[in-house]
Length: 67
Image 1 (spheres, one colour):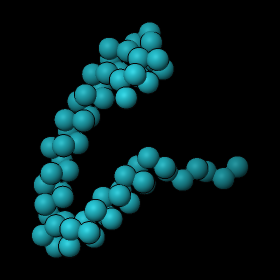
Image 2 (cartoon, helix red, strand yellow):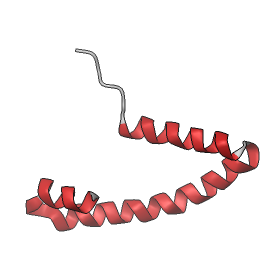
Image 3 (cartoon, one colour):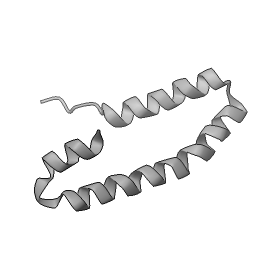
Image 4 (tube, rainbow, N blue to C red):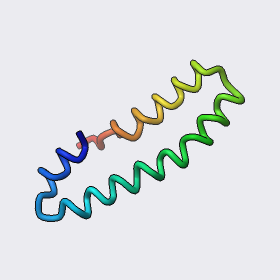
């Protein structure tokens, strides 16, 4: 789904956008596997999922500055 939106939004430079998303996805899986393991070692699996969901929400929905 991300590739569909990227090719529409970045039509003039879609190859670069797709490359960045692909590299970010690979990096994310490399980073989040050990992070998830470390969280699971210290928390329950439910608390780990909640923490990861909060991180995802913070990244995807950052606070907007007041005008």
